[in-house]
Image 1 (cartoon, rainbow, N blue to C red):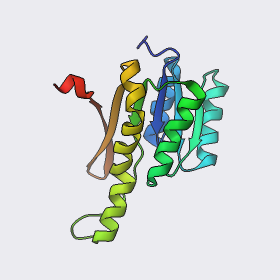
Image 2: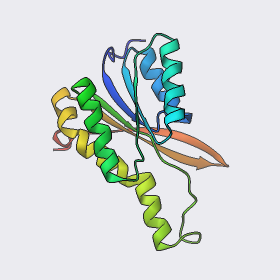
Image 3: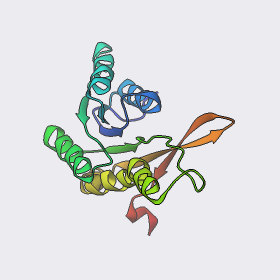
Image 4: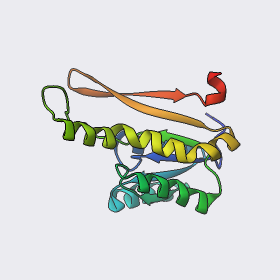
Length: 163
């Protein structure tokens, strides 16, 4: 299948393991250049090696996305290395089990930073480049059903599309 992704620079948060790694591999299989952004240098390196063994391109950035300055750094490094961002897959997050009965204000705010705030920050910093390239943002959300996590990709329209 040709999705028209050849040589497209696409940032994938949480791209070193699980659903994110599957997304990275699919993008690479389409000829894209996935940028793996994750907190574990070891996991990122292993994912990148896997791509390169198959002859695909890629790049990895170590970033703790619950820290706003590291979200900006990830976008800045991508732009320094490639000069553009043509797609963003916001996939990173953890199932921390925080809820009304099982949390506190402090843990809830921490959960927001680990699972939501970085989606906004990465998209915010990448937006100028995404607008220039007419790129897209995809947010991966997870639905729990009978103990299984089901990924639900969702394309977010750019502001111009919403008007």
